[in-house]
Image (cartoon, rainbow, N blue to C red; front, side, top):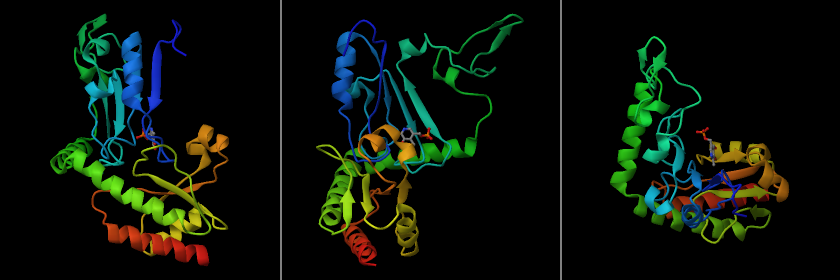
Length: 247
Ligand SMILES: Cc1ncc(COP(=O)(O)O)c(C=O)c1O
C-alpha cells in the first residue's frame, strides 16, 4: 500500500484486547526504507516486553504508565526522534513548552519538553519513574519470558474448558488473555472472580470497535498475568473459571 500519498504509518503494537502482537519492527523497517514517519502506540506493550526504539524503527512512540509498567494512573510518556521533534509544534503550548522571549514572540524548547506543560503532577511523575526503574531492575527480557509462560499456560487451561471461548490472535500472543464464558456476561464474571481475589478486567466492543465488529466479539474478560504471578495462581484461576462455567 506504500505510495507517495503515505505520509505517516501509525499502528498499535499490542491492541487493548485479543492478545495480538503486531510485527512493529517489520513495519518500522518498511517505514525506514520509504522514509515515512512511523508512530507506534506501545501503550499495552511497554512494561511487558523490551521496548527499544532503534530496533523498532519508530520515530514516535507513545505509552502509558498505568498498565504493564504498574505506574500511577494519569501518567505516560512520549518518545520522538530528535530531528523530527524539532519540526513539530505541539497542538497546545504554554510558557513552559515555549518560553515567551519577546512581547510578540515565543520560542519552542529545543528538546522534548516542548510537549510538556508548566503544571503537572509531580508525585505521579515520581511514581512513574520508580515504576520504570523497578521494571528495568527486574529486566524486561525476564519479564517477557515469565509473562509468556504464564499466558500460554492460561490460554491452554482455558481453551479446554467447555463453555469458554478464547478470542486471542497471532503467532506469539502477549500476556493479555481475552475470553468469554458462554451463558455468562463478562461483567458478572468479573465481579464473581473479584470476590474470589482474582483481578480481571472487561473490555467492551466499544474499546476495539473495528476488531469487535469484524469478529463479532462480545464484551470479553481480560486477564493479564504479570511477573508477580505464579503458575499455581494461573492454575487456581483456571479452576475458578471452570467453576463459573458450571454454575
Ligand atoms: C492500545 C491502546 N492504546 C492507547 C490507549 C489509551 O491509553 P491512555 O488512556 O493512557 O491514553 C489504550 C488504553 O487502553 C490502549 O489499550
